[in-house]
Image (cartoon, rainbow, N blue to C red; front, side, top):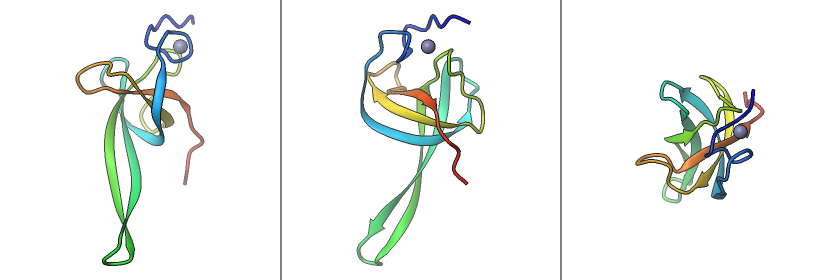
Amino acid sequence: MECKDRNCPVHGGLKTRGMKITGTVVSDKVKKTAIVKVDYTRYIYKYERYLRKRSRIPAHNPECINATLGDAVNIQGTRRLSKTKSFVITGLANKKQ
Ligand SMILES: [Zn+2]
């Protein structure tokens, strides 16, 4: 299948910049969009321990990648694609755990 997505980082003209993050797709209901859950840790000096945090990042899901629920994906920042999307999926990642 030919990829005709203008906002594809490989086949379209979309430039990526900024943060590269790996996460898991927790929702693929929206067309060409995936919600990516990212787990990360913050060090809290007072308790000398790490705090586990998570965030949900809406990312553009190009036709040629078409990530589905549960996929581990690499995402990278890009220009704002819609009101909430400013990340794009750049590929599937090797699954952790
Ligand atoms: Zn593509």
